[in-house]
Every structure is written in structure tokens, then in C-alpha cells.
Image (cartoon, rainbow, N blue to C red; front, top):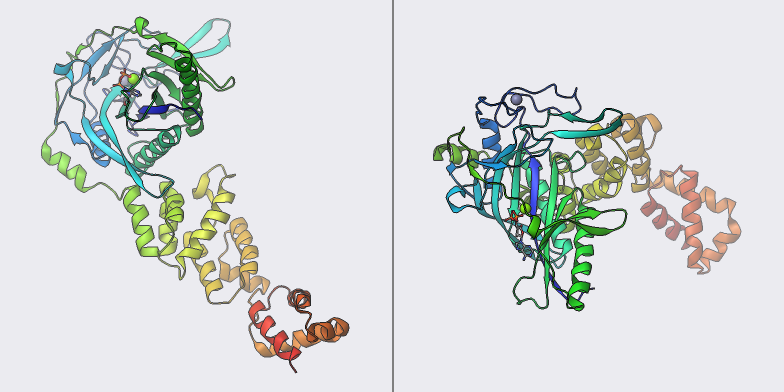
Length: 484
Ligand code: ADP
Ligand code: MG
Ligand code: ZN
């Protein structure tokens, strides 16, 4: 561990889940023919006029409200000029904060809460959320003609979320990114899939000698595309900065990337080569004036957010904070549990089944939980059958496996396979006496006080009953006969 104290702030880019682009009607579509969804507007041809996408604005406002931000009803567009082969227009339309007169991002001054290991919660400030358009994509496919350009992504709507430098460790940074990803999914604002690149994160990090020292010089690590890369990149950079400070080498503010293979952060550019984007107000679009009534309407239609859902699960289903946390990480899982729990006699046991059995199986499935054949109600019923003592926990595992494979209901499987637990004392006593008759010597030892041999008898009887005898009753009857 480094003796220094890290300070971290994140910039998170996410693609909004709209059907069309930010300033034109072209479709947002991945994995399609290159340059299929383009027009004069998103190709940046002179004279084409942008029309902001209402749905994108609505999503950005929804996100701002879910992150407890103030919404700017007079947001402003700015032009960020730079040349790059994936940007035909030569500029990106965005909302920036560098020039005070232009500083009208759609949302600012919000916060989220993360849950720390010690059970406490911590608030992390959201500085701002701004909207912007994405660039196209260069395809380096090693063809002899050179690289290709695909403009399908040009003009795709993005939101950038900037946090305050309130984060104090790489682990906290992961929790912040996780929470924001969850909120993006719960609100439906973005698919927030890091593997598909529709969510990525830049980590800003500096270190200081004590918790109340002024902030140190930061580096910004670009384009981290998984939780583990974020954590590893920040850890590596802490180490790098610590070694420099120990050696009394001054740090320089810079932009870096993370090399996963070498586990190293590599400088892309230093402050001196910072680009001058010559920002100015976007002349082709007016300010984005939103009626405050619309903002309130969006606020009123916000869905239940992850924190609220987690608390409700703890309160109404009496499950542990940890289980509630695991069950709400993904919206789909939380909905699955919610539906099952309302039909289940023991939501605590249900939570165990989902966490330790179902989610483990789902991990290896392509389509995730939605591709599972078992319905929430069927799993609730399986737990109910254990609760009623119709089947044992052990048999339930067999039924569960069959439910996963065939999608049949637990009742059908139990009927078909004759798996109902035997709890009738008369039937069980007959089985017990049979086993005793076949193992006279061992039974005498048991009677004379050798308690350790009881397990042998329970095992024999369970086997004789095909696992169906109720083990509690088997035990009682064994004790009763031993006293005869
Ligand atoms: P830039 O455009 O230079 O990236 P932004 O304002 O977009 O600047 O983002 C700055 C990010 O860096 C924010 O997330 C902020 O919390 C973080 N940050 C600012 N100062 C520090 C610091 N000294 N150490 C770590 N992070 C910092
Ligand atoms: Mg930045
Ligand atoms: Zn277009």
C-alpha cells in the first residue's frame, strides 16, 4: 500500500438509448452495413441544419434528475473544433464548462450514494452532465487500400457525467461507476453496456501526503472499458505517482491510457500539447429551452431507482442488506426477484436460491436471465414446496436442475418423478426397521451409546427411500426404536 492518499474524479460517457441521432433522423444502429445510416447533417455538410432530438434531451433530463441534479432549462450548445479523420464536420457539438458564458450543461450539482464495506453510505458529488454527439469510426481492417471510415456512429447522442473529486480509493471508484451504470439501466436512459462500448470511463487521479493536504497534480486515464480495468489502472497510477513523489520528482498534469497487458499507464499527451478547441456557441442551433412543466413531468415519471429498490427489498422481504445489494445490481435480476418474492412464503430462502444457484447458472448463458426457461413464479413455488415440507432441500436441487433444463413447473416434475417427500411416520418406521434388521450388529453398537453410528443409519434409510424420507422424522424414529 502506498503511504499517499488518492483523490479521484470520474468522467463517464454513455450512449443514450434513442432510436435516432442527436441532430438528424438517421437511425442509431450497430453491426450494420458501413455508412448506411448517414445524411448531409451527420456527415457535416455545409448548409445542413441540426434539429435537436427531443427524446435524447428527455433522456438527459431523466438522467440528471435520477442523479439528483439541477436541470438547466436554458442549456446551450457549443462547437468544439478539431480535425480528426473520424469527424467529417471538423467539429463536435457539445455543452462545455470552460468558458463561463457558455457554461450551461443540461444538468449540474447532483450526487449519488455508494455503500461502503463498513455498512456506511458515502455521498459523491456529480459536477455536471452534458450532452454531445459522438464521432464516426475508423476501421483498421488491414486491407491493402488502407483504413476505412464508417460514419454510422457520427452524431450518436452521448451524455458525459463528471463527478466531483470526492472519491478516495480505486474501490470507491468502482462503486461509483457501478452505481451510475445501475441508474442508467434502471432509468432506461442507456443500455450502459461496457463491453459494447456504449459506456466508458476516464479516471482522474492525484495523490497527496495526508487527508487534508491540498490536491496533487492529476493524470487523466482515458477510455477504461471495464470495472476491473478502472480499478487496476487507478492502482497502477497511484503506484507510479507514489514512486515519483518519493523520489522528489514533480508530476506533470497529463492524459494517459492504460496498457492492460503490461499493467502500465502510458502518457498520450502532456499539458503542453493540450488541444485548443476554439469553442464558440453553436451558430446553427438555438439554446435548448425546456418548459419547467416538462421537467416536472419527467421527474414524476422516474421509475423506482436502485437505492429505493434495495431498501424496499430489505424492508418488505426481510432479506439481508448484502442479498438486497446483489439482487439489485442488475435491473433484470431485481425485477425477477421482485416478481418471485411476492409469491413466495420465504423470500430469504428464495434470495439464496437466486444468488447461489440461479445467478451462477446464468453467468454462463449468452442471453442472461431472460434466456432462462424457469419463471420467477416457478422458483417461488419450488421454495414454497420446501417450506411445506412436500420435498426436501436435497430433492429441490434435483427439481431445480430439471426446471432449468426443461422449463417445467416444480409440481409437474415432482409428479412425473414421484419425488414427494415421505413424512408419514408409519411408512418411515417400516423402512427404518428394515434397515435395522439388515444391520443388527451396528444397531447394537448404536443402542449401547455409540452416537457416531447414527449417521450411517440415516444414510442407509435415505438411500432406501430414494432420498425421499423426511430426515427429521427418520432421526426421531431411530431414537425411538433405540430406546425400546
Ligand atoms: P477536463 O476537461 O480537463 O477533463 P473536467 O472538468 O471535464 O476536466 O474533469 C475533471 C475531472 O477531474 C473531474 O472528474 C474532477 O473531479 C477530477 N479532478 C479535478 N481535480 C482533480 C485532482 N486534483 N485529483 C483528481 N481528480 C481531480
Ligand atoms: Mg476530461
Ligand atoms: Zn444523419
